[in-house]
Image (cartoon, rainbow, N blue to C red; front, side, top):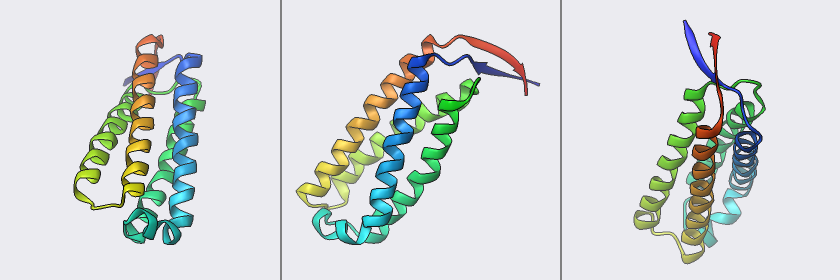
Length: 135
Protein backbone atom coordinates (compact mmCIF):
# COMPACT_ATOMS: atom_id res chain seq x y z
CA UNK A 1 0.00 0.00 0.00
CA UNK A 2 1.29 3.44 -0.91
CA UNK A 3 1.00 6.50 1.26
CA UNK A 4 1.58 9.93 -0.15
CA UNK A 5 4.26 11.66 1.83
CA UNK A 6 5.63 15.17 1.62
CA UNK A 7 9.11 16.46 1.16
CA UNK A 8 8.64 19.24 3.70
CA UNK A 9 9.68 22.75 2.86
CA UNK A 10 11.18 25.07 5.44
CA UNK A 11 7.85 26.91 5.54
CA UNK A 12 5.93 23.71 6.32
CA UNK A 13 8.40 22.69 9.03
CA UNK A 14 8.29 26.13 10.65
CA UNK A 15 4.49 26.33 10.57
CA UNK A 16 4.19 22.90 12.21
CA UNK A 17 6.91 23.57 14.77
CA UNK A 18 5.42 26.96 15.65
CA UNK A 19 2.09 25.21 16.22
CA UNK A 20 3.80 22.59 18.40
CA UNK A 21 5.61 25.23 20.46
CA UNK A 22 2.49 27.36 20.96
CA UNK A 23 0.35 24.32 21.77
CA UNK A 24 2.93 22.98 24.21
CA UNK A 25 3.33 26.31 25.97
CA UNK A 26 -0.43 26.84 26.18
CA UNK A 27 -0.89 23.26 27.38
CA UNK A 28 1.65 23.71 30.16
CA UNK A 29 0.14 27.05 31.17
CA UNK A 30 -3.39 25.67 31.35
CA UNK A 31 -2.54 22.31 32.90
CA UNK A 32 -0.25 23.74 35.58
CA UNK A 33 -2.08 27.01 36.16
CA UNK A 34 -5.70 25.93 35.90
CA UNK A 35 -6.52 26.68 39.54
CA UNK A 36 -5.05 30.17 39.37
CA UNK A 37 -6.59 31.00 35.99
CA UNK A 38 -10.09 29.69 36.72
CA UNK A 39 -11.22 32.78 38.66
CA UNK A 40 -9.83 35.47 36.34
CA UNK A 41 -11.03 33.57 33.25
CA UNK A 42 -14.43 32.72 34.72
CA UNK A 43 -14.02 29.11 33.62
CA UNK A 44 -13.89 25.87 35.61
CA UNK A 45 -10.40 24.73 36.56
CA UNK A 46 -11.24 21.21 35.37
CA UNK A 47 -12.03 22.56 31.89
CA UNK A 48 -8.81 24.56 31.72
CA UNK A 49 -6.76 21.61 33.00
CA UNK A 50 -8.43 19.23 30.53
CA UNK A 51 -7.72 21.53 27.61
CA UNK A 52 -4.13 21.92 28.77
CA UNK A 53 -3.67 18.16 29.05
CA UNK A 54 -5.14 17.72 25.56
CA UNK A 55 -2.65 20.20 24.13
CA UNK A 56 0.42 18.33 25.38
CA UNK A 57 0.12 15.18 23.22
CA UNK A 58 -1.20 17.34 20.38
CA UNK A 59 1.98 19.41 20.57
CA UNK A 60 4.08 16.24 20.51
CA UNK A 61 2.27 14.93 17.44
CA UNK A 62 2.58 18.20 15.54
CA UNK A 63 6.27 18.46 16.51
CA UNK A 64 6.82 14.92 15.23
CA UNK A 65 5.26 15.90 11.89
CA UNK A 66 7.34 19.08 11.76
CA UNK A 67 10.55 17.13 12.36
CA UNK A 68 9.69 14.22 10.08
CA UNK A 69 11.79 13.76 6.95
CA UNK A 70 8.64 12.89 4.98
CA UNK A 71 5.41 13.46 6.91
CA UNK A 72 2.23 11.85 5.57
CA UNK A 73 0.28 14.41 3.56
CA UNK A 74 -3.03 13.34 5.11
CA UNK A 75 -1.65 13.78 8.63
CA UNK A 76 -0.70 17.37 7.83
CA UNK A 77 -4.12 17.89 6.24
CA UNK A 78 -5.68 16.58 9.45
CA UNK A 79 -3.67 19.09 11.51
CA UNK A 80 -5.01 21.92 9.35
CA UNK A 81 -8.59 20.61 9.58
CA UNK A 82 -8.41 20.09 13.34
CA UNK A 83 -6.91 23.55 13.84
CA UNK A 84 -9.82 25.04 11.89
CA UNK A 85 -12.26 22.99 13.98
CA UNK A 86 -10.56 24.36 17.11
CA UNK A 87 -11.11 27.92 15.87
CA UNK A 88 -14.82 27.22 15.33
CA UNK A 89 -15.09 25.54 18.73
CA UNK A 90 -13.37 28.51 20.35
CA UNK A 91 -15.92 30.89 18.80
CA UNK A 92 -18.66 28.68 20.19
CA UNK A 93 -16.92 28.74 23.57
CA UNK A 94 -16.88 32.53 23.63
CA UNK A 95 -20.59 32.53 22.84
CA UNK A 96 -21.64 29.85 25.33
CA UNK A 97 -19.19 29.44 28.22
CA UNK A 98 -19.90 32.69 30.05
CA UNK A 99 -16.23 33.49 30.64
CA UNK A 100 -15.04 36.85 31.90
CA UNK A 101 -13.72 39.46 29.49
CA UNK A 102 -10.19 38.21 30.24
CA UNK A 103 -11.26 34.61 29.61
CA UNK A 104 -12.98 35.52 26.36
CA UNK A 105 -9.95 37.55 25.33
CA UNK A 106 -7.67 34.58 25.98
CA UNK A 107 -9.93 32.25 24.00
CA UNK A 108 -10.17 34.73 21.12
CA UNK A 109 -6.42 35.41 21.09
CA UNK A 110 -5.46 31.76 20.97
CA UNK A 111 -8.15 31.09 18.33
CA UNK A 112 -6.72 33.83 16.11
CA UNK A 113 -3.22 32.42 16.60
CA UNK A 114 -4.45 28.94 15.67
CA UNK A 115 -6.24 30.37 12.62
CA UNK A 116 -3.02 32.04 11.50
CA UNK A 117 -1.13 28.77 11.94
CA UNK A 118 -3.78 26.82 10.02
CA UNK A 119 -3.64 29.30 7.14
CA UNK A 120 0.17 29.09 7.08
CA UNK A 121 0.07 25.28 7.24
CA UNK A 122 -2.47 25.08 4.41
CA UNK A 123 -0.35 27.37 2.24
CA UNK A 124 2.81 25.41 3.07
CA UNK A 125 1.03 22.13 2.35
CA UNK A 126 0.17 23.35 -1.16
CA UNK A 127 3.84 24.21 -1.78
CA UNK A 128 5.36 20.99 -0.44
CA UNK A 129 6.44 18.50 -3.10
CA UNK A 130 4.98 15.00 -2.92
CA UNK A 131 6.88 11.76 -2.61
CA UNK A 132 5.25 8.32 -2.89
CA UNK A 133 6.64 5.86 -0.37
CA UNK A 134 5.81 2.41 0.87
CA UNK A 135 3.69 2.48 4.00
